[in-house]
Length: 226
Image (tube, rainbow, N blue to C red):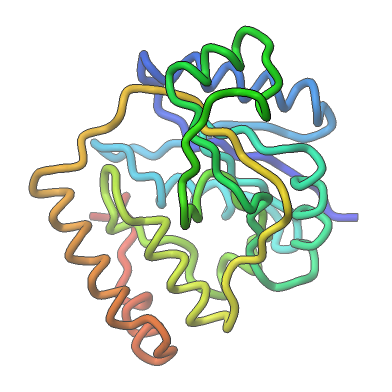
C-alpha cells in the first residue's frame, strides 16, 4: 500500500499559531502513523498554491498526500474514506460535505475541549478548500494549482474549475465536516488581490471548455521563478 503524508502550507503569523498547534496535535492523536510536515516557498508573500504544489511534488507519484490548511481540522472517518478512494480514483477528494467556520467563540469552545460538532459555527456554502486528498499523479493530470495567485484569494475556486473541466468531474466529497479555526483575517484588497480577481475571471471564462482551460493552465509560471 502506498504511503500517506500530510503537508501543511505554513508561514508563521501570531494569530495563526494556536490553530496550527491544535491541528498538529489532532494529527498526532488521531493519525500518529502519518508523516506530517510544513511547506513554504521563498516568495516575498505567502503563495498557498505554490506551497501545495511543492509539497505534493516531493511525494512518489502514487502516494496519497493530504494537503491540510493550517487552520482546518477534518473528521477522522471522512478523512479515512477520502484517503482510501484517492489512491485509485484519479480525482482529488474533499473529506467533507459541510464546512464549519467556528469563529472566535466556537474556536474558544473547541480549544476548551468541546466536541467540535457542538461548537458555534457559520456554515460556509460552496467551500472547496481546507483539506484536499490526492496523489501527485492525479494532481499533475489537471495542472495542480496556479501559482500566479499570489497572497490571498481565488486559488481554490480557480483550481476547482480546472479540476471539473479537465478531469470531467468535480472533486469527490465524503460525508462529514471540517472545522476552520479562528485567526485574524488576511487583507483581500489592493493591486495583488485585483490581479488575482482578474485571473479568476479568466478561469470562469474557460470553465467547461477543456481546450481553453488547458491553454490557460499551460501559461502558468511557478511563483518561485517570477
